[in-house]
Image (tube, rainbow, N blue to C red; front, side):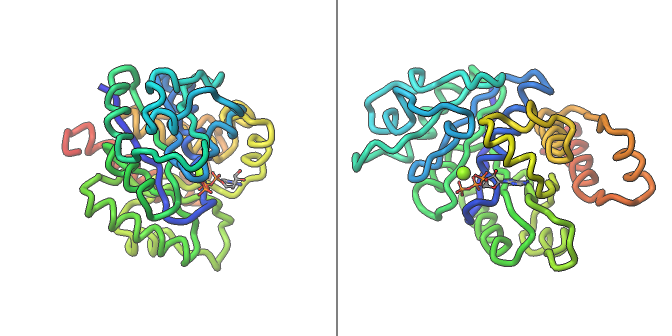
Length: 272
Ligand SMILES: Nc1ncnc2c1ncn2[C@@H]1O[C@H](COP(=O)(O)OP(=O)(O)OP(=O)(O)O)[C@@H](O)[C@H]1O
Ligand SMILES: [Mg+2]
């Protein structure tokens, strides 16, 4: 049975859609999983646009407005995984909370269903949380975003949706940024991926393709592979010798790797 994972934040532009696309690509292309990426950002949908799907005939909006079956709204991304895009269709009402019912119908067809959430604290993010088995919270290392991250974690806990951890994105590694330890204590959640700010991410977007295929050995993509390994319950070795060496001699931040190994151990022991 497939697992449904929501990718959330209560702050716009932190990297939810980027994380959804690239995690989907890593799970599919690196670990051979059957993956569906779903655009749960109903009011500002753009997952399809990230992958070059511009004018889909049936979308999640049509499904939630009871005008299409979910099966008709599934498209091949062309990058090894499937996608359910959203697209605004005017002022018609959509039943946000039916998202769970529709995704349950697809659960057995996929190993993983990833939902790209809205950043707004409204029905959209709540529908994502309620449809998900677990959540990844995307944050950046600044205080306003950390505040949103803390709120997202609190709401998820209230909704009783477990959180796998935080994807810390757009990191410049500068002294003014909020430290990992501070983020983990404030949000009460481990950082499970640390992604640098990298123009290759924006270049890949301009080519409407996942970073996985555009710049496979960048730090960003290796980190997505490591996160995908945790989700898939598999081991993954960084293919870059220099990165392995600098980790060993303490020149790289190792907290996310330690967190992933600890969680992997807990999964293996059946504690999670
Ligand atoms: N690690 C990164 N390095 C550089 N640019 C990045 C990185 N991650 C994301 N971006 C860029 O930041 C912008 C916003 O990213 P994205 O759309 O994934 O955020 P989002 O959280 O989904 O936004 P929204 O809340 O509006 O849906 C995009 O232009 C994306 O290419
Ligand atoms: Mg987005």
